[in-house]
Amino acid sequence: MELFLQQLINGIVQGSIYALIALGYTMVYGVLRLINFAHGDVFMVGAFVGFYTAAAFKISEPSLGALFLVMTSAMCAAAILGILIERFAYRPVRKFSRLTSLITAIGVSLLLEYLAQFFFGATPKSFPTVLEIKNINITSNVTISNDSVLIIVVSILLMLVLNIIVFKTKLGKAMRAVSFNLDVAKLMGINTDFVISFTFALGSALAAAAGILYSVHFTKIDPLMGLLTGLKAFVAAVLGGIGNITGAVLGGLLLGIAEIMVSAYISSSYKDVFAFMILILVLIVKPAGLLGSAAQEKV
Image 1 (cartoon, helix red, strand yellow):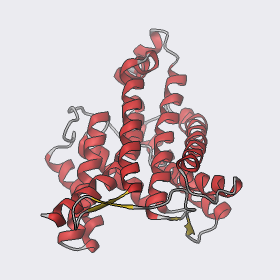
Image 2 (cartoon, helix red, strand yellow):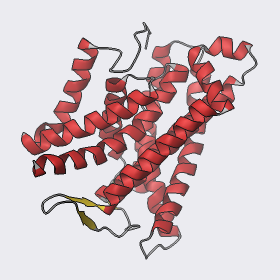
Image 3 (cartoon, helix red, strand yellow):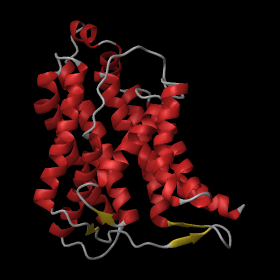
């Protein structure tokens, strides 16, 4: 029982990171019906911005203030990157078929990965210690580290902020209108270009926050770190019902828990295979995901 409880905690921590990234996938899909495959690489860029911010400010003493500085810098930089990607890569092809947008997304993803290898180097880097790690005993054999607690708490706070923005603000209402029908929203006087740019900025900022939390927890970063993690977050978004914010959170948590349980009780070699098995099963059995609504779309 204690082993199960320990793995459940680890799964929630892992799932919280997936959920934050999955929110970006689901928001962009919600407003544009576009699968932004570059989103995982924005997660990677966020981690590297945090790395170089810590170096620039010569952070030597781990503290919550240092973590806040690193995370805020990463989220701002990623938000700007998200706006640039939307403005110069996706907006020019928006009037074309969705296949064109999808191919563009793959191209942007590869571009970010190779640019990152060129500027940051292909060798993995150790993320600086911006938070002193301590273990908290829940029972004699079950522990949780303070960075794990931080991942869960920060993820919940950011999801609550996102929920308030989407459902309680005028801009959120415009996002939902654009999601419902882009052309009708434009006819109603909504600045759809601004709303779409804001959606990219918001999703990218969440991905950068996930990148910092991931880096603090796992301590290693590299230019390809967003590839597999981003794909798994995409699986989480599909599992929950892509386009549904609550579904993205649910899918992230379920995928994280399932992955950790497979590692603990079967073999860590199968955890990646299991994630993509979930994707195939969902597409066969319930293509709309757990909370998604059925709709016929050409992607």
